[in-house]
Image: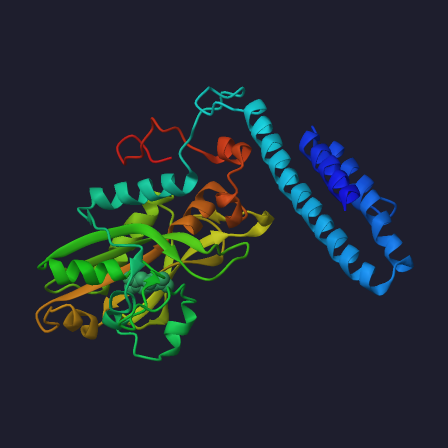
Length: 357
Ligand code: DAH
């Protein structure tokens, strides 16, 4: 068996001495390859007596396994060393200024959000916020979505795994739960807008899984649809910076408002571009209505004493319309050329006095 011991220490020394992956592979082929030294030994077994073959065979196989595992171990060590060397070679100091020195800019969605907030702030609305991770009560139940109602399905909700107590949290599908949170924690009169991120399982040219809404809510005595109409028309005229905005209410259904409507704005679609304030087409831009008595009750407000209106606007969509961006998905592409083209200066915060856009 001394021949086997010599061969083993020889091969193991070559494995240990291999300077790189290529050299190691050459050692492997020379020992374990088809015509390698250890494979050659296995071929001699055929000529041996059964007893001899049993003993020699086991010894050669054990030798082959030890050499194979030494090679595997060495390979991992060489690969790790190579990665370390590469990381050291390609070290990049991300705090250094980049070669292009492109100025940062405000994303059009955030600009649009700021514009909406500034218009409503001037009208006396306060900004309210709520969590992105909501519970079923605030996102659905308190908003008068009956259990198992198909409207829940229509929201294509991202659900979390059930907690131990069986409750299932979710990513809010709209900003309407902030209405509930506000009515529960504040006494009327209430006049708020709630800007924020919303989430639905949806992805195409006009839908992204994350999008933005601004919710509006007014609760007081004697509030009616006329207040809603004036508020929205005034907002749209300021947002599109033209007095020529013409709108229409179209009857609709939302569980949390009664009556409910969608508001369309008149526009011109000829020539592939959408122009607000002219033309004969209609474009749907928001949902609204009078807060349903069930919602008021769920939030501890007496519907015989107080009434209110609410609305929900898609921010990304409004931004696309105002600034002529054709595909919603570009908003998330992080393409610096797109951002440089559509972005806004961080030094020019929108406000109604100095102009919005
Ligand atoms: N939450 C609705 C949605 O995401 C939008 C909406 C419609 C909000 C009507 C409202 C409303 O407050 O009154 O589709």
